[in-house]
Image (cartoon, rainbow, N blue to C red; front, top):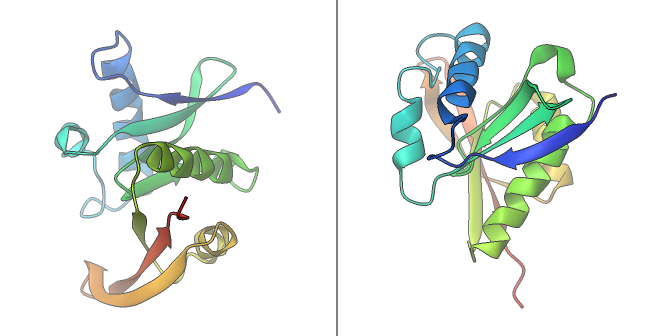
Length: 150
């Protein structure tokens, strides 16, 4: 495996447009049109308490990303099950703790067993089932992780 670096996107950086463009390509390839962030990605990043972490491999290949409002995490298919998603999620959890976020929540398709296993491994708990979250016939679990009290 090459050199992996987790980077926080700075909105005013010179590579911001390139990174967002690469993520939009990944979104369009992986997700059905109605689930993809491709059309609203910039808007999502402008939301309060939002940010973006992404993983670069060998200084050039964007292989995973997470919008740090707890909504979206994706790892390119050929890089899955190699620990990239876990490293990215751990980095996002640390960012949230530094920002004094008390509860991190996310949604996940109950059929995505690898994602469910990872979230539970890192301490997330199922809060509720949200029927029709992704589409009329696709539900989601709302999961959460509370920060430890100091």
